[in-house]
Structures are given as C-alpha cells and as structure tokens.
Image (cartoon, rainbow, N blue to C red; front, side, top):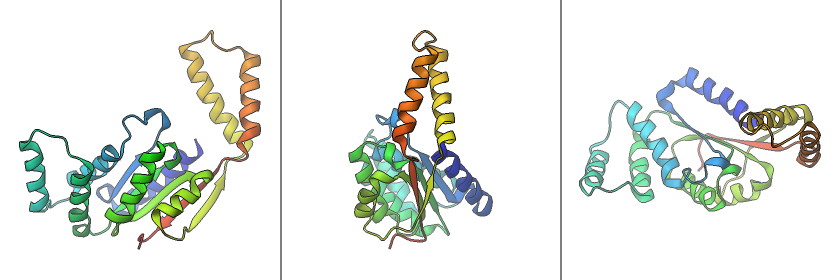
Length: 205
C-alpha cells in the first residue's frame, strides 16, 4: 500500500540516522480497530521507549510498581503521565504514525489530542488520507506543513489485486473473473488518486 510503503522508507531512514532506540512507530489498520485503542497505541510507544532507553526515571518505576501492586492494567492517564516524564529525558525522539484515517474516529481524535499534550519534545511524522485533514488540523491546533502524494491508477489496481487474491486463496469459490474486474473498476473509478498527506514537525508547539 502506498502509505505503508512510503512510511517504511521514512522509518528505515530515521532508524539508520538516529538509531532504533530513538524511533517509535505504529501502523494503523482498520481491521484491527478493536485492539488499536488509545491506551494500546500510547502503551506501545511507551514500552518501546522504556525498553530502549538507558535510564528509566525513578518516578516512572514508582508508577509501574504501583500499577503492578494493584494488579491493574495501565490506563491512558498513567501512560500519558509517564510519557511526559520520560520524553524530556531523551536526547531526540521520533514518533511515526501511519494511516491515521484507519483508526476509529473517537480513537483518532483522542490520540491526536494526546500528541499535542504529551509529545511536545518529540519529532512527529504522520500520514493520513485527505478527507480527515480538517480533523487533524483542528485536533493538533497547528498549521500543517504537508507533502501531498497521490497513488496512480496502477498503484491502486496492484494493491486491490493483491488483496482480492489473498481473499480468494482462502475462499476460492466466492468470486469469478468478471466480478473481480467489476469490483476493481468500481473502486478505482471512485478512488480519485487516494491522496495521502504527510506532516513533518520539529515540534508541535
């Protein structure tokens, strides 16, 4: 897919330049909306940073021990607090979130607000399809600096064929060649280039 492929190039370059410890990333997927909640996404970022950082502040250790003692799972507030404590201790951190439009609306909005309040010292790279641009801009409350990239018809066709063939390998009797072509043409005609926006930000503030 265009977004994931492009994001992978950026992420690989950041890791090469700055080291894996300084780059946290999440690929959003509409098929995984149940598990891709705000607490799980932020928790994944925090886990990566805690594992790779050479020093974990005592205040964070205290919070983690308190959660463990209560036999509870960390909540969004706990994770946000730990991120606010940890990020200023790190030399340079990059956060990459690919395909924000594939998150459930409420999850996406809450996550964007968290980016504005918990990640002030991080460099952030985001991708999304154009239709959520007003939502992203409003939630982050910043002037977006974006690069617009559009998939051409062959990119879209190639991606759709791959997805259809993958489904047909599981259920080979569900679709014939004529139906496949009708589906391809219908989706491609409505795709309109499938614009994707990229936001590069040295800081959100």
